[in-house]
Image (tube, rainbow, N blue to C red; front, side, top):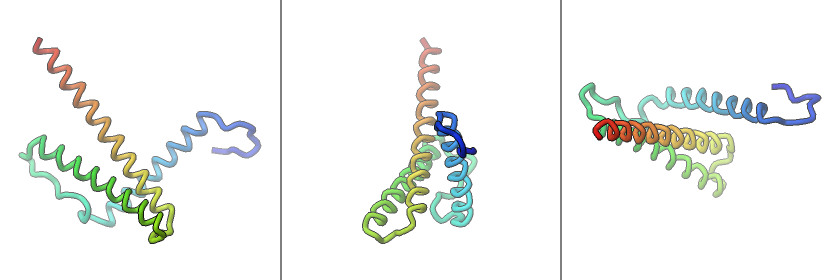
Length: 120
C-alpha cells in the first residue's frame, strides 16, 4: 500500500489496512499459541465428545481471551504494562474471538430455523 503522493485515503486503503492488521494479528496469535502450547487452552476433545461440551469449551476460551484483554487494559491504565502493542494485540484478539463466536451463533440460529421450517 503506497500512500506517497496521493491526496486521498479511500475505502480500499482502509480495507487493505484492516486486512493487513488482521493477518498480522492472526500470525502473532499463532506464534503466541505455539509458544504457550496448551497452557491457556483446554485439551482436545475425545472423538465421542458431545456438541454441547465442545461449544461450552469454545465459549470458555473466548471468555478467557476477553478476560485477558480486560486485565491487560487495566494493567496498562495502572502503568503496570508499558507495551501498548501487547494491549492492542489482546484487544484485537478478543475482538476477533467475539466476532467468530457471533458468526457461529448466527450460523447455528440459521440452521435451527431451517430445521424448524422443514418440520412444518
